[in-house]
Amino acid sequence: MKSVFIPFNQSYKDDLIQIFEELSIRGYTFWENVQGRGTKRGEPHYGNHAWPTMNSAIITIVEDDKVDRLLKALHALDQETEMQGLHAFVWNVEAMI
Image (spheres, rainbow, N blue to C red):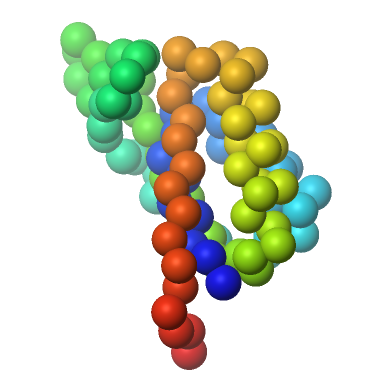
């Protein structure tokens, strides 16, 4: 199992939920208002007068064989509007209850 953490511009929420549906990814945790700044390009998302945009974030635990398909779908979405901001980070899951 893998944990996939996805911070993203709030405008991507419906697209991400659709990707999860298409890949039969059922469980996730969603944070609505997350502040941050990308490491390479794009503008900060701080929710203030200078940088009014906000991020959200989702974390999901998926089977190993779904990770590549999920990352490819996320990458394709990010390429459509790269300046909006979407990233994905993958970790091994050692145990679950």
